Picture 1 (cartoon, rainbow, N blue to C red):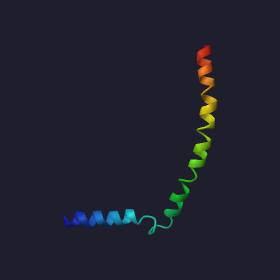
Picture 2: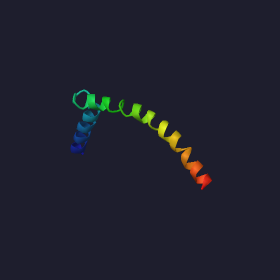
Picture 3: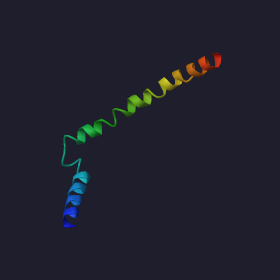
Picture 4: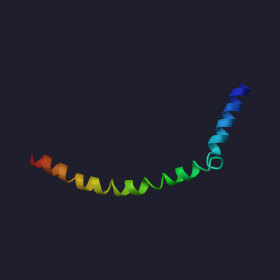
Length: 62
């Protein structure tokens, strides 16, 4: 049981302190989330809007 607790604590400490210990993983992770939001917000609103009208119109006319 002690072994399990030791491993669990080690993993928890690593997960909880993931940003502080790994300086290389902290920057990329922080930069990755902000990058996808902008492109996703601009892509979903534009593509759906332009693709939404054409499909229904073509289907209705067909």
